Length: 376
Image (cartoon, rainbow, N blue to C red):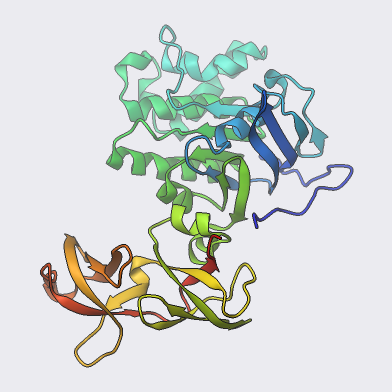
Protein backbone atom coordinates (compact mmCIF):
# COMPACT_ATOMS: atom_id res chain seq x y z
CA UNK A 1 0.00 0.00 0.00
CA UNK A 2 1.28 3.53 -0.70
CA UNK A 3 2.82 5.14 2.37
CA UNK A 4 1.10 8.21 3.77
CA UNK A 5 2.33 10.72 6.29
CA UNK A 6 0.39 11.61 9.44
CA UNK A 7 -2.54 14.01 8.82
CA UNK A 8 -2.01 17.63 9.81
CA UNK A 9 -3.73 19.20 12.79
CA UNK A 10 -6.93 21.16 12.44
CA UNK A 11 -5.03 24.43 12.92
CA UNK A 12 -2.31 23.56 10.41
CA UNK A 13 0.32 25.01 12.78
CA UNK A 14 3.95 24.08 12.12
CA UNK A 15 7.32 25.26 13.32
CA UNK A 16 8.85 28.26 11.54
CA UNK A 17 12.56 29.16 11.45
CA UNK A 18 14.06 32.55 10.62
CA UNK A 19 14.92 31.32 7.12
CA UNK A 20 12.73 28.47 5.94
CA UNK A 21 9.28 27.40 7.01
CA UNK A 22 7.62 24.03 7.17
CA UNK A 23 5.36 23.01 4.28
CA UNK A 24 2.34 20.74 4.61
CA UNK A 25 0.46 19.26 1.69
CA UNK A 26 -2.76 18.10 3.31
CA UNK A 27 -4.80 15.68 1.18
CA UNK A 28 -3.90 17.34 -2.14
CA UNK A 29 -5.93 16.08 -5.10
CA UNK A 30 -6.04 17.68 -8.53
CA UNK A 31 -8.09 16.74 -11.56
CA UNK A 32 -7.82 17.89 -15.16
CA UNK A 33 -11.36 17.32 -16.33
CA UNK A 34 -12.02 13.66 -15.65
CA UNK A 35 -8.34 12.74 -15.31
CA UNK A 36 -6.75 12.61 -11.85
CA UNK A 37 -3.23 14.11 -11.90
CA UNK A 38 -2.63 13.96 -8.12
CA UNK A 39 -4.60 11.86 -5.65
CA UNK A 40 -4.74 12.51 -1.89
CA UNK A 41 -1.06 13.37 -1.41
CA UNK A 42 -0.01 14.09 2.19
CA UNK A 43 3.47 15.49 2.88
CA UNK A 44 4.83 17.14 6.02
CA UNK A 45 8.10 18.90 5.16
CA UNK A 46 10.20 20.27 8.00
CA UNK A 47 11.56 23.82 8.05
CA UNK A 48 14.95 24.00 6.33
CA UNK A 49 14.59 20.54 4.79
CA UNK A 50 15.42 19.66 1.18
CA UNK A 51 12.82 17.25 -0.20
CA UNK A 52 12.77 15.77 -3.70
CA UNK A 53 9.62 14.87 -5.61
CA UNK A 54 10.81 11.87 -7.60
CA UNK A 55 8.97 9.88 -10.22
CA UNK A 56 8.55 9.18 -13.94
CA UNK A 57 7.01 11.65 -16.38
CA UNK A 58 3.32 12.18 -15.71
CA UNK A 59 3.43 11.08 -12.05
CA UNK A 60 2.21 14.44 -10.71
CA UNK A 61 5.40 15.97 -9.33
CA UNK A 62 5.29 19.16 -11.44
CA UNK A 63 1.57 19.53 -10.70
CA UNK A 64 2.37 19.52 -6.98
CA UNK A 65 5.11 22.11 -7.47
CA UNK A 66 2.75 24.40 -9.40
CA UNK A 67 0.15 24.03 -6.66
CA UNK A 68 2.66 25.09 -3.98
CA UNK A 69 3.76 28.02 -6.15
CA UNK A 70 0.17 29.16 -6.66
CA UNK A 71 0.16 28.76 -10.44
CA UNK A 72 -2.48 26.04 -10.09
CA UNK A 73 -5.35 25.74 -7.61
CA UNK A 74 -5.84 22.18 -6.36
CA UNK A 75 -9.22 20.48 -6.60
CA UNK A 76 -9.09 19.30 -2.98
CA UNK A 77 -6.83 19.71 0.05
CA UNK A 78 -4.74 22.45 1.63
CA UNK A 79 -1.24 23.93 1.29
CA UNK A 80 0.13 25.18 4.60
CA UNK A 81 3.39 27.15 4.90
CA UNK A 82 4.50 27.71 8.48
CA UNK A 83 1.25 28.35 10.33
CA UNK A 84 -0.66 29.80 7.37
CA UNK A 85 -3.00 28.16 4.86
CA UNK A 86 -1.92 29.86 1.61
CA UNK A 87 -4.50 28.51 -0.86
CA UNK A 88 -6.15 31.92 -1.32
CA UNK A 89 -2.86 33.80 -1.84
CA UNK A 90 -1.59 34.69 -5.33
CA UNK A 91 1.94 33.55 -6.29
CA UNK A 92 3.40 37.00 -5.55
CA UNK A 93 2.35 36.78 -1.89
CA UNK A 94 3.42 33.22 -1.12
CA UNK A 95 7.07 33.98 -0.22
CA UNK A 96 8.11 31.32 -2.72
CA UNK A 97 11.23 31.46 -4.92
CA UNK A 98 11.30 29.42 -8.13
CA UNK A 99 14.14 28.23 -10.38
CA UNK A 100 12.86 26.88 -13.68
CA UNK A 101 14.56 24.36 -15.94
CA UNK A 102 15.26 27.04 -18.58
CA UNK A 103 16.36 29.63 -15.95
CA UNK A 104 13.97 32.29 -17.43
CA UNK A 105 16.47 35.16 -17.07
CA UNK A 106 15.59 38.52 -18.60
CA UNK A 107 17.90 38.85 -21.64
CA UNK A 108 17.91 42.67 -21.66
CA UNK A 109 18.90 43.02 -17.99
CA UNK A 110 22.38 42.62 -16.56
CA UNK A 111 23.17 39.82 -14.14
CA UNK A 112 22.89 42.22 -11.17
CA UNK A 113 19.59 43.60 -12.47
CA UNK A 114 18.22 40.09 -12.89
CA UNK A 115 19.09 39.24 -9.30
CA UNK A 116 17.57 42.49 -8.01
CA UNK A 117 14.38 42.20 -10.07
CA UNK A 118 12.25 40.64 -7.36
CA UNK A 119 13.38 43.24 -4.84
CA UNK A 120 12.55 46.05 -7.25
CA UNK A 121 9.08 44.60 -7.80
CA UNK A 122 8.57 44.65 -4.02
CA UNK A 123 9.53 48.32 -3.74
CA UNK A 124 13.02 47.98 -2.27
CA UNK A 125 15.27 51.01 -2.57
CA UNK A 126 17.99 51.09 -5.20
CA UNK A 127 20.61 50.93 -2.48
CA UNK A 128 19.02 47.81 -0.99
CA UNK A 129 18.68 46.23 -4.42
CA UNK A 130 22.35 46.86 -5.19
CA UNK A 131 23.73 45.64 -1.88
CA UNK A 132 21.61 42.47 -1.85
CA UNK A 133 22.46 41.68 -5.47
CA UNK A 134 26.17 42.04 -4.68
CA UNK A 135 25.85 39.85 -1.58
CA UNK A 136 24.06 37.06 -3.43
CA UNK A 137 26.32 37.18 -6.47
CA UNK A 138 29.30 36.83 -4.14
CA UNK A 139 27.49 33.90 -2.48
CA UNK A 140 27.16 32.10 -5.82
CA UNK A 141 30.71 33.17 -6.80
CA UNK A 142 29.61 35.40 -9.67
CA UNK A 143 30.36 38.88 -8.36
CA UNK A 144 32.83 39.41 -11.20
CA UNK A 145 30.12 39.08 -13.90
CA UNK A 146 27.52 41.41 -12.37
CA UNK A 147 27.57 43.79 -15.36
CA UNK A 148 27.26 41.12 -18.04
CA UNK A 149 24.12 40.07 -19.91
CA UNK A 150 22.81 36.49 -19.56
CA UNK A 151 23.88 35.57 -23.11
CA UNK A 152 27.48 36.22 -22.09
CA UNK A 153 27.37 33.50 -19.44
CA UNK A 154 27.71 29.72 -19.54
CA UNK A 155 24.75 27.47 -18.73
CA UNK A 156 26.07 26.80 -15.24
CA UNK A 157 26.57 30.51 -14.58
CA UNK A 158 23.05 31.30 -15.78
CA UNK A 159 21.70 28.69 -13.40
CA UNK A 160 23.54 30.25 -10.47
CA UNK A 161 22.13 33.66 -11.42
CA UNK A 162 18.62 32.18 -11.47
CA UNK A 163 19.25 30.68 -8.03
CA UNK A 164 20.53 33.99 -6.66
CA UNK A 165 17.46 35.78 -8.06
CA UNK A 166 15.17 33.26 -6.35
CA UNK A 167 16.99 33.73 -3.03
CA UNK A 168 16.98 37.55 -3.27
CA UNK A 169 13.37 37.81 -2.06
CA UNK A 170 14.28 35.71 1.01
CA UNK A 171 11.71 33.03 0.22
CA UNK A 172 10.21 30.80 2.88
CA UNK A 173 10.22 28.02 0.30
CA UNK A 174 12.50 27.45 -2.70
CA UNK A 175 11.05 25.46 -5.60
CA UNK A 176 13.42 23.86 -8.12
CA UNK A 177 11.82 22.48 -11.30
CA UNK A 178 14.27 20.04 -12.96
CA UNK A 179 17.01 22.70 -12.62
CA UNK A 180 19.90 20.48 -13.74
CA UNK A 181 18.29 18.72 -16.71
CA UNK A 182 19.90 20.94 -19.37
CA UNK A 183 23.46 20.61 -18.02
CA UNK A 184 26.12 18.11 -19.02
CA UNK A 185 27.07 15.44 -16.50
CA UNK A 186 30.16 17.06 -14.95
CA UNK A 187 28.56 20.50 -14.69
CA UNK A 188 25.38 18.94 -13.31
CA UNK A 189 27.32 17.37 -10.44
CA UNK A 190 29.09 20.68 -9.69
CA UNK A 191 25.77 22.52 -9.62
CA UNK A 192 24.12 19.89 -7.41
CA UNK A 193 26.88 20.39 -4.86
CA UNK A 194 26.55 24.17 -5.17
CA UNK A 195 22.78 24.12 -4.69
CA UNK A 196 23.13 21.87 -1.65
CA UNK A 197 25.72 24.24 -0.16
CA UNK A 198 23.62 27.35 -0.82
CA UNK A 199 20.49 25.69 0.53
CA UNK A 200 22.29 24.88 3.76
CA UNK A 201 23.77 28.39 4.06
CA UNK A 202 20.42 30.08 3.39
CA UNK A 203 18.48 27.59 5.52
CA UNK A 204 15.56 27.76 3.12
CA UNK A 205 13.04 24.91 2.83
CA UNK A 206 13.50 23.44 -0.64
CA UNK A 207 11.29 21.32 -2.86
CA UNK A 208 13.09 19.77 -5.86
CA UNK A 209 11.29 18.15 -8.79
CA UNK A 210 13.38 15.51 -10.56
CA UNK A 211 13.16 12.21 -12.41
CA UNK A 212 16.86 11.49 -11.76
CA UNK A 213 17.18 8.91 -8.99
CA UNK A 214 20.84 9.63 -8.26
CA UNK A 215 20.09 13.35 -7.96
CA UNK A 216 17.27 12.77 -5.51
CA UNK A 217 19.21 10.26 -3.41
CA UNK A 218 22.35 12.42 -3.17
CA UNK A 219 20.78 15.83 -2.52
CA UNK A 220 17.71 15.18 -0.40
CA UNK A 221 17.03 14.96 3.30
CA UNK A 222 13.93 12.97 2.33
CA UNK A 223 12.49 11.73 -0.95
CA UNK A 224 8.81 11.58 -1.94
CA UNK A 225 8.40 8.90 -4.62
CA UNK A 226 5.30 9.35 -6.78
CA UNK A 227 3.59 7.01 -9.23
CA UNK A 228 0.47 7.83 -11.25
CA UNK A 229 -0.36 10.74 -8.98
CA UNK A 230 -0.06 8.78 -5.72
CA UNK A 231 2.57 8.95 -3.01
CA UNK A 232 4.34 5.59 -2.83
CA UNK A 233 6.90 6.40 -0.13
CA UNK A 234 8.23 9.42 1.78
CA UNK A 235 11.46 8.64 3.61
CA UNK A 236 15.20 9.40 3.83
CA UNK A 237 17.19 8.40 0.72
CA UNK A 238 18.87 5.42 2.39
CA UNK A 239 15.49 4.05 3.49
CA UNK A 240 14.00 4.48 0.01
CA UNK A 241 16.94 2.58 -1.49
CA UNK A 242 17.48 -0.10 1.16
CA UNK A 243 13.90 -0.66 2.35
CA UNK A 244 11.54 0.44 -0.46
CA UNK A 245 7.90 0.55 0.50
CA UNK A 246 6.55 -1.00 -2.71
CA UNK A 247 7.61 -2.99 -5.75
CA UNK A 248 7.37 0.19 -7.84
CA UNK A 249 9.79 2.06 -5.58
CA UNK A 250 12.22 -0.87 -5.57
CA UNK A 251 12.34 -1.11 -9.36
CA UNK A 252 12.23 2.64 -10.09
CA UNK A 253 14.87 3.79 -7.61
CA UNK A 254 18.17 2.20 -8.57
CA UNK A 255 18.72 -1.08 -10.38
CA UNK A 256 16.94 -4.20 -9.16
CA UNK A 257 16.68 -7.80 -10.31
CA UNK A 258 13.16 -9.19 -9.89
CA UNK A 259 12.95 -12.92 -9.23
CA UNK A 260 9.65 -14.75 -8.59
CA UNK A 261 9.27 -17.31 -5.85
CA UNK A 262 7.20 -18.71 -2.99
CA UNK A 263 7.16 -17.42 0.58
CA UNK A 264 8.19 -20.21 2.95
CA UNK A 265 7.77 -18.21 6.14
CA UNK A 266 8.20 -14.72 7.58
CA UNK A 267 8.56 -12.97 10.93
CA UNK A 268 9.95 -9.70 12.30
CA UNK A 269 13.52 -10.76 11.51
CA UNK A 270 13.07 -11.63 7.82
CA UNK A 271 11.41 -13.74 5.16
CA UNK A 272 12.48 -17.09 3.67
CA UNK A 273 11.78 -17.42 -0.03
CA UNK A 274 12.18 -20.34 -2.41
CA UNK A 275 13.08 -18.79 -5.75
CA UNK A 276 11.77 -20.34 -8.96
CA UNK A 277 15.37 -20.18 -10.21
CA UNK A 278 16.25 -22.93 -7.73
CA UNK A 279 17.60 -21.52 -4.47
CA UNK A 280 16.38 -20.36 -1.09
CA UNK A 281 17.16 -16.84 0.12
CA UNK A 282 16.54 -14.80 3.26
CA UNK A 283 15.00 -11.38 2.57
CA UNK A 284 14.20 -8.34 4.71
CA UNK A 285 11.00 -8.37 6.77
CA UNK A 286 8.03 -7.97 4.44
CA UNK A 287 6.69 -4.44 3.91
CA UNK A 288 3.33 -5.93 2.87
CA UNK A 289 1.76 -9.01 4.43
CA UNK A 290 1.81 -12.28 2.47
CA UNK A 291 0.59 -15.65 3.71
CA UNK A 292 3.05 -18.55 3.81
CA UNK A 293 2.90 -20.39 0.49
CA UNK A 294 1.92 -17.22 -1.38
CA UNK A 295 3.64 -16.03 -4.52
CA UNK A 296 6.12 -13.18 -4.11
CA UNK A 297 8.60 -11.20 -6.16
CA UNK A 298 12.06 -10.91 -4.63
CA UNK A 299 14.09 -7.82 -5.57
CA UNK A 300 17.86 -8.03 -5.33
CA UNK A 301 20.16 -5.11 -6.11
CA UNK A 302 23.11 -6.01 -8.39
CA UNK A 303 25.51 -5.33 -5.50
CA UNK A 304 23.61 -7.81 -3.30
CA UNK A 305 24.73 -10.66 -5.59
CA UNK A 306 28.11 -12.20 -6.31
CA UNK A 307 29.55 -14.98 -8.40
CA UNK A 308 30.41 -18.04 -6.28
CA UNK A 309 33.94 -19.26 -5.82
CA UNK A 310 34.91 -22.82 -6.67
CA UNK A 311 33.16 -25.28 -4.36
CA UNK A 312 30.45 -22.85 -3.26
CA UNK A 313 26.79 -23.57 -3.87
CA UNK A 314 24.35 -21.13 -5.46
CA UNK A 315 21.95 -20.54 -8.35
CA UNK A 316 23.22 -22.06 -11.59
CA UNK A 317 23.53 -19.66 -14.50
CA UNK A 318 25.44 -18.69 -17.64
CA UNK A 319 27.19 -15.38 -18.33
CA UNK A 320 25.60 -13.59 -21.28
CA UNK A 321 27.50 -10.31 -21.13
CA UNK A 322 30.09 -8.50 -19.02
CA UNK A 323 30.70 -4.77 -18.68
CA UNK A 324 33.87 -3.49 -16.97
CA UNK A 325 32.95 -0.10 -15.48
CA UNK A 326 36.19 1.20 -14.00
CA UNK A 327 36.30 -0.13 -10.43
CA UNK A 328 33.25 -2.37 -10.98
CA UNK A 329 32.36 -5.28 -13.25
CA UNK A 330 28.70 -5.86 -14.11
CA UNK A 331 27.90 -9.38 -15.31
CA UNK A 332 24.57 -10.19 -16.94
CA UNK A 333 23.75 -13.80 -16.08
CA UNK A 334 20.82 -15.92 -17.24
CA UNK A 335 19.39 -18.13 -14.50
CA UNK A 336 16.45 -20.44 -15.14
CA UNK A 337 13.80 -19.39 -17.66
CA UNK A 338 13.46 -15.79 -16.49
CA UNK A 339 15.11 -12.58 -17.60
CA UNK A 340 18.88 -12.21 -17.12
CA UNK A 341 20.00 -10.76 -13.81
CA UNK A 342 22.76 -8.21 -13.25
CA UNK A 343 25.56 -8.73 -10.74
CA UNK A 344 27.88 -5.87 -9.74
CA UNK A 345 31.19 -6.78 -8.13
CA UNK A 346 34.29 -4.76 -7.23
CA UNK A 347 37.04 -5.15 -9.82
CA UNK A 348 39.74 -6.01 -7.32
CA UNK A 349 43.34 -6.38 -8.45
CA UNK A 350 42.47 -5.60 -12.07
CA UNK A 351 40.22 -8.63 -12.44
CA UNK A 352 38.91 -9.47 -15.90
CA UNK A 353 35.25 -10.01 -16.83
CA UNK A 354 33.95 -13.57 -17.32
CA UNK A 355 33.58 -14.51 -20.97
CA UNK A 356 30.08 -14.97 -22.43
CA UNK A 357 28.96 -18.59 -22.12
CA UNK A 358 30.88 -19.20 -18.88
CA UNK A 359 28.89 -21.38 -16.43
CA UNK A 360 28.64 -19.72 -13.01
CA UNK A 361 26.79 -19.97 -9.74
CA UNK A 362 25.22 -16.93 -8.10
CA UNK A 363 25.02 -16.21 -4.36
CA UNK A 364 22.82 -13.62 -2.64
CA UNK A 365 23.87 -11.71 0.48
CA UNK A 366 21.47 -12.75 3.29
CA UNK A 367 18.90 -10.31 4.60
CA UNK A 368 19.26 -7.60 1.92
CA UNK A 369 16.68 -8.59 -0.69
CA UNK A 370 13.17 -7.12 -0.52
CA UNK A 371 10.01 -9.09 -1.31
CA UNK A 372 6.52 -8.01 -2.37
CA UNK A 373 3.28 -9.82 -3.24
CA UNK A 374 3.25 -11.07 -6.82
CA UNK A 375 0.66 -9.51 -9.09
CA UNK A 376 -2.49 -11.58 -9.35
